[in-house]
Length: 131
Image (cartoon, rainbow, N blue to C red; front, side, top):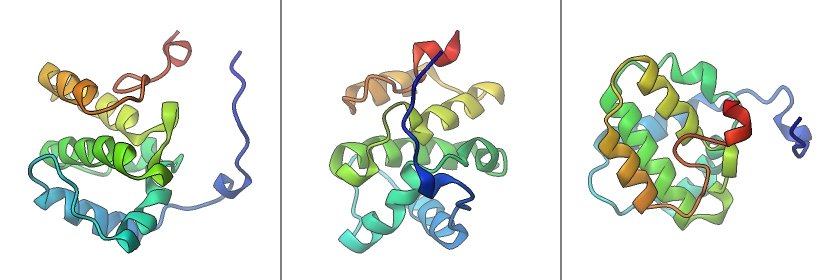
């Protein structure tokens, strides 16, 4: 049994579709390893970095390239913006799982994630959740 923290704001909190669309647009054009988000954008996207609705939303995102870029944006964002810190609730975990289900996951992405984060749960999540 796992003990977690309760976040009342996550209850019935739909994902901000406009922010998601803008983040996906940013991720689609993302290249390299340096995020170029303004402070306002980083604050706006912070709710997406810890939103519990990624398991469902990720199924709607068809482009493996986009998912791979979202993984990189969230991995780098968590290191750069403290408000993006999500631990074992990171959308990176869900997005990696979706790529694996689609048979589109490249093991080199695991090496990239691990070399760009200090989040011990990335990319596969909590061991307890996988048991």
